[in-house]
Amino acid sequence: MTAAVVVPWLAAWPLVPDRRIDWQCLSDIEFDTVTPHGKFVQVTGTMASDYSHNGTGTARFSGRIRQVDTVNVVHRMAEFDYVALDSMVRVNTIRASRLATDDAPDDLVFQYVYGGFRPGHTDYFQAMRTGAGMSVGFNQQPRVFCAAPPGARAAGAR
Image 1 (cartoon, rainbow, N blue to C red):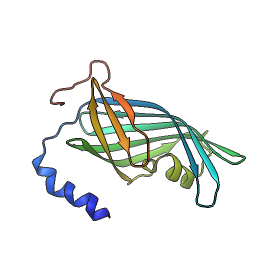
Image 2 (cartoon, helix red, strand yellow; image 1 turned 45 degrees about the horizontal axis):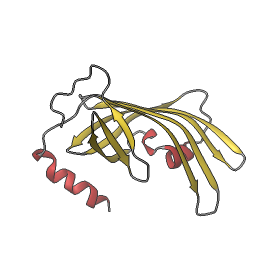
Image 3 (cartoon, one colour; image 1 turned 30 degrees about the vertical axis):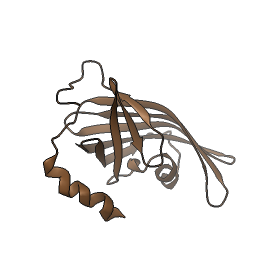
Image 4 (spheres, one colour; image 1 turned 90 degrees about the horizontal axis):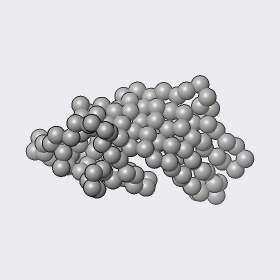
């Protein structure tokens, strides 16, 4: 399965021009999951991501993970490099950190919030132009709307 995702990137990489631009995403999210063991896990919070045309960015999440009668606070940040290949984007986490108020176990955060809060994590998603912004979708996550920040460099964008 991994080869089916990675091989097309390697083959097409030199053929597609770099189309990175500055853009920001801000989304209030709620993920409700029932585990295979019937346990209900709810994630609520705000995810904010910033992408720079130089191929770097940050992702921040502030919220909570609720399991039955346990609630954990999540305050995480990740720094990443990204590459755009037409409408597909590959994100690789370089560094990740947590605030002192974050008391959520790492395994819960990686599984139910975002695996990209783990250094070395690579993720792929699709970004499509919608008017003045972009619609962004990850595997098993809803689409969010992203916009260029005021005064952002948009040269070469489609």
